Amino acid sequence: MSAVASGPDLLVGMGESKVSKTQPLSALGLGSCIGLLAYCPLSGVAGMAHIMLPEAFPNQPIPLPGKFADTALPHLLAEMRKLGAGQMLRVAYAGGAQVFQFGSDAGGRMNVGERNAEAVAMHLSKARMRALAKDTGGSLGRTLRFDPATREATVRTVRGPAALLVKF
Amino acid sequence: MEGSAFTELQQSALAEIANIGLGHASTSLSEMFASPFHMEIPRVVQTIASDAAADWGEMEEAVAVLVPFEGDADGMLSFLMPFACGQNLCAALVGTSPASSAEFSELEASVLLEFGNILNSSFLRAISDLTGLSLLATPPMVGIDQARSLLASVTAQAEFNQTAALTVETALVADDGLSLRGSFYCMPSRAGLSTIFDRLGLGAAA
Image (tube, rainbow over all chains, first blue to last red; front, side, top):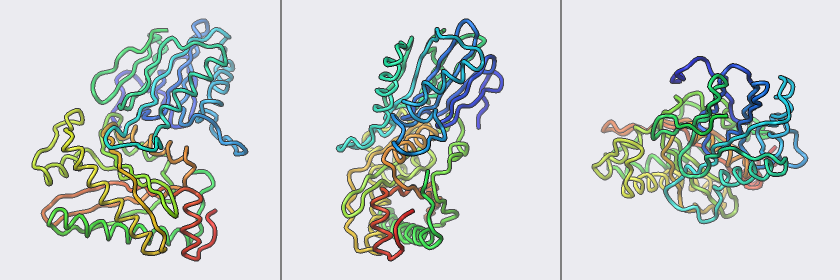
């Protein structure tokens, strides 16, 4: 794996959610998944979830709450509170691409990226939280990174260097 | 994938289907390239391994072909290969090869679509031959992007559709040196898998 430039990042794998006060957080190769980032400016606690699916399956165990848009947000906020985060959180998210850009998707069967983006927006709105920035859709997979030291979240695709998504 | 444990017998049946499918595929590719293809199957894995993404560098690029199928059983098939293999395919078939993923022309993309069609319909034919089920490939889709993003998208879609997944790592090597290495993902829906196992007399899918 190619090394990330500045220091060891805490990698947030598919379906995982992680929290940090100092270590940068990274979700690599989001594709149709969504990287949901929350930050508490008072405590400096950051959290990131690597959401794969819009909602948890009914009547099935949920080993990874970060995996589903409906369970990821409350889980992430609860984990952040354990590290001292308060109520006033800043949020941003990226991902939800349709990476299969050639050919036809007549039945719309490969639209999980779009569904993920809609679900994240809906659950944020339900929780009365407004994202300060988002970068969703399109046909390129993204890597989302947040560095608590600079409070900057960046998004990178194969097309170019990391671009600033938001500075919290 | 959760709850997709197969019995040993079911697993060897799936491996056999993969074997026959890749046999059909190498025959079709030999005709397409007018050069004999040989295949190797180094590994058959029961699921899309959760750490499969770690095999790829952060910005390493790949080509993925995805073919949903329907009929007596439904599901999806996908083939993921390194970007260089996609370039080699284009060079061998249309004489030009895109230098980067941003430079794929419609013609070059259609080469990959056609390749995906051949590979995946060979697999469907293998399942049909063994089971007598009628399976129809729907138009393929191709993605050229970060390997990790492609893999994440295939995995997410497989889980979204609640399919069972089988990974077959394979290498197809032509006499003239063209080598196509990659992973094949066979993702029948749970109902589709039950239908297939039922036809093979192997009992219900777990």
